[in-house]
Amino acid sequence: MYEKTRLLDSFCYFCESLHGIMDERRKIEEPVSAEFERFNKDFEASLRSETTRLQSAIDVILNSTGKHVRPLLVLLTAKVCGQVTDNTINSAVLLELLHTATLIHDDVIDETKQRRGVPSLNAIFDNRISVLVGDYVLSTALIRSIQTGDLRIVGIISNLGRDLSEGEIKQLETAEESILDENCYLQVIKKKTATLLSACTEIGAISSGASAEVIALCREFGEYLGYCFQIKDDIFDYFKEANIGKPTGNDIREGKVTLPLLYALRQGREEEAARYLDMILRKDFAAENVDSLIEFAKANGGIEYDEARMKEYHDKAVDVLLRLPESEAQTSLILLADYIMTRSK
Image (cartoon, rainbow, N blue to C red; front, side, top):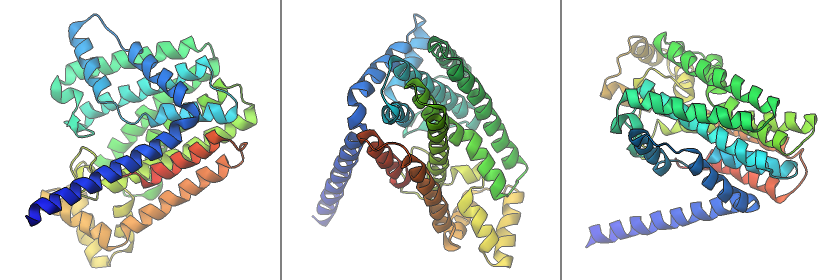
């Protein structure tokens, strides 16, 4: 009887939490709800193929897409700068296509078998198909960028592709060589995440016809938000209860040492820190060692330090945003920044 009551209480808590998240999401989307619906239809229509296996893979992608934070950023930024145009919708689609292509390729590189709690594309098919599907989605994004007819947008997308690739290679390099440096870590997440979100906000502003000054502010806002987003993602790796569709400690097993552990290695007792540093340098990532590294990071204030750094970037993003005109879209962007910092997955 007790067990049934406990399960019922847990289910009720889950429903209440889900309801709260949905309400929060609706508030964020409200100023661009009609435009967001247009995006969803256009995004789905952009991925079609007469090749049976390719279409099967596309169906998997469409059934496993996430929260569409990036296109939402594009739409809301355009709205805060003036209006959402056809070019804004097109830009939101191309940026989500580009992001989707990078996720497909990342899963192959990292040998990831799950994404958001469901099998990844390379787990369902194989690496050959996944790489080719990723290339197909990327090519579709490039076509859409040309269709904007704006060389500024084409230039941003071209540079973004280089930055994302460089960021992944830099991350592999730091993991293989065990480079334990916070500045190096920040360089990686700038290339991997911050540049993508800054491209979303910059292109959103361009598509609405904003001035050069406003475009620069929007780009800055997106970059700070990108740091905040990735630092939050890194925290999830330290908690088993995080429902993010990948095992706890996955980053550590791959040799990716993020802020909580970097901080603990600096602040922990010298003898203890030396022992864990040796473990990392030897790449001795057996399950019990990964658990020990996680506990070491937590015990030495690593999570609190990570959260403090994340809040710094969140506050910088909001400060920039407050320099733009007040509007419902501005309020939604502030709510989106808050959501990124407090999300549970």
